Length: 324
Image (cartoon, rainbow, N blue to C red; front, side, top):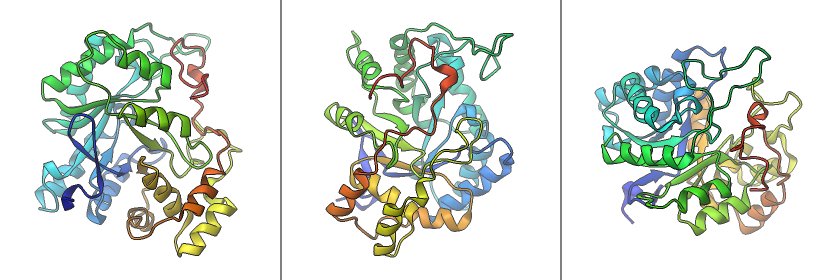
């Protein structure tokens, strides 16, 4: 196998995506400069897949970090796989390309490697990321996601992105795109919350059957983001079974949770702004979990979602009412 792609998966459009990515979303109280520092550290330790989004409001910093690492000779642009996402306020088809162009301006890059629909739940267009009415309810928008998808296809044709995909879609919403009359490109991926407490086995099987890669976010669980996550959520990395398997391999539970995804054919995002953790999170290619380990981790599934996105629960395209 070609070494450059040995830690990558081939997407259904022929491009390659590294199986381990660096996530850049941070709680509001973390200064944006932290995202730039962490991204540079991640590139230095070997990460080549960087995942961000318009709503993270850090693309200027991430773009600067990538350009600095290109300038100092650490990487070339083509070595980096960069993902951005079109936010819910831009899902009307005429707003999709301007949203991507805005991200590209912030990044100061000519193209992204992957452009995905962040969430199927369209909300009222405008500068407010989560527009609310006088009663504090989110103001939804009505958009046919097949039209949104067509706008993403045009972005690919225009060379602004190499690949296109979706995020937070359930199998019914994926079917709707796949069955769209005149579909030009299939989504290459569906990025969803996925970890041992929500292992998405049914959605994973469905995606595999359609040659769509499942990309896992919140792969290490999530306790930090109190805006989106309930305070008393279980702490995945304290799970005794995960810790026992980690101990056996001389690893930490985070490395086991990441390795688990890679072995089941899932592309996994690891998020940390701590230098020691960033290094550890990249060290998952020199050990292997046994079939017994994999089975034990499969057994931890409890369909527990850290990011329940309840503010969107009444939206007609809300994805989490269905089983998968």
